[in-house]
Image 1 (tube, rainbow, N blue to C red):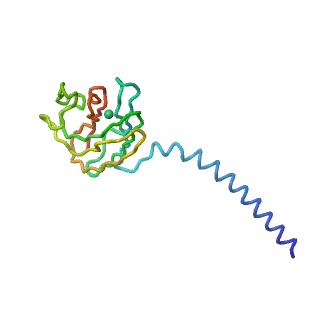
Image 2: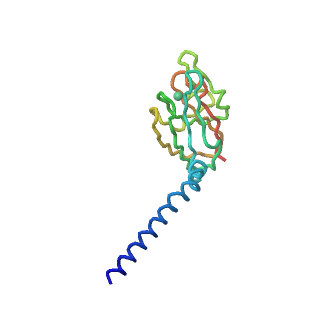
Image 3: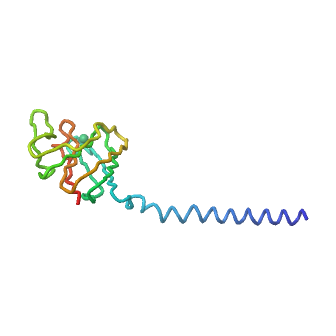
Length: 159
Ligand SMILES: [Cu+2]
């Protein structure tokens, strides 16, 4: 009787060991690429970078989304503070009215209407902004002093 129990126990241990090995190898290979490419509908991942002081970028995972609720998941992968501003405008994101003295785009300049913003995103931080976007064109920018001029802008369309 005790022999049978020991035999069963060792069989199930062996089975567990085999399963554990299969579980740790298969999913890692198949799910890892999907993490970066599969976002829920209406969700846009935005990456903020500042490789050098004169090369700052704001890069969305897609440049359009269906009109309605849009969730921007904004990650600051740079080394300094940034912000994330959504502006409604027919102007190109690179062509917003600009204040040379303040070294920033005019968020309420002619042809520009502010929608919403995340005012501060620290290095390494990820923050989310949920907005309701009517169909139209938008500019996504970081407007901390100098950052817009150095390249932190992207066009975006709600379709
Ligand atoms: Cu910035």
